[in-house]
Amino acid sequence: MKVVFFGTPVFAVPSLKKLLEHPAFEVLAAVTQPDKRRGRGNQLTPSPVKSLALAHNLPVWQPPRVKKHKQTLTLLREAQADVFAVVAYGQILSQEILDMPRLGCVNVHGSILPQYRGAAPVQWCLYHGERETGINTMLMDAGMDTGPVLLEARTPVGLLDSATQLGETLANLGADLLVETLLRLEGGEIQPIPQDSARATHAPPIKKENYCLDWSRSALELHNQVRGFFPDCAATFRGKDLKISATAPLGPEFWPLLPPEFSALQQNWPALSARFGRPGEVVSLAKRFGPVVQTGSGLLLLREVQPAGKRPQTGWDFVNGTRLAVGEVLENGRLAI
Image 1: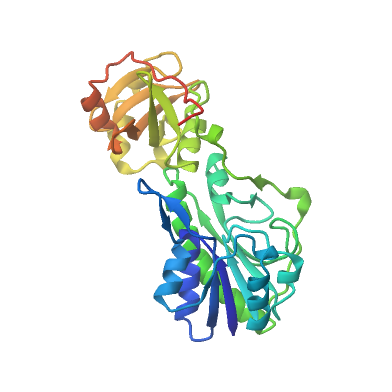
Image 2: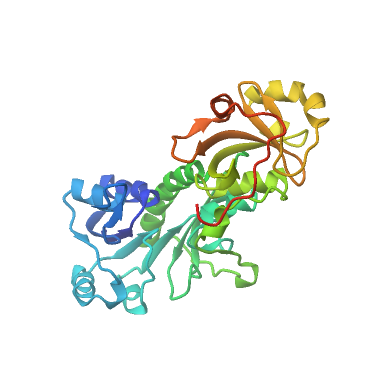
């Protein structure tokens, strides 16, 4: 089965790897986003998909705008692929491209459609506190994630899962589902199911303001924001930005969902829950855990933070390194972080 693979980030790598390893597929080329400048040296860096493709001596095509790039359109047409496999590519494909392969274009999407159509399904799923998510494969059409669904796989979402952790789980789940989808599609064993657009929700690109923490929100809302937009959510501490990358909401409704190591906090809950402060105020310093902060509703443990100009550190190291005191207040995040 001849395949052209479209993908860019780490999320797409397991899918390409599975196709390369499977004897039923011949991957003809990888289409990925142009190299971007990253890091302190501002050097051009290839996408993860490009790095894997080059390691397997695959042709790599990197058009700035694939639907307008005549050379790439010619290459795609001449490839005479059976299918285009698309995983987090990052560009919209034109109807001309969608019509090229014999079996169409198959997309791996990181949600249970029609929920969370769009660019950031994993992040918004966590932000909204979903307890279950999954992967769909679908036949692409001209809309944004609106094509008919082919196959589905589901996975539970843990309370402490971050976007990176859940993304890795879904990427591996999606890779297996892509292989199964292509094999069954070739065999005529799948009946595409149209989506119910009346039930659709959306997952737009993340904006800078989505990273700003507002302590008047509840502990659970803040926790979901931190893990959904990991690792870049920020508050303000002593006049400087403080990234907060891992938290845990505390209280009876959360103990069953937290790992056993949180039992010490559970045992100390009567004393912890008796303390009150204004939103953003540090009401306790939980030994070996970190600062416990009052929110608009409930208490939030800061498990990992990154002060301005420093490396990420545990909440308890932050307490010791800054000599943090009960009663200090973390202000809301600022837009420029």
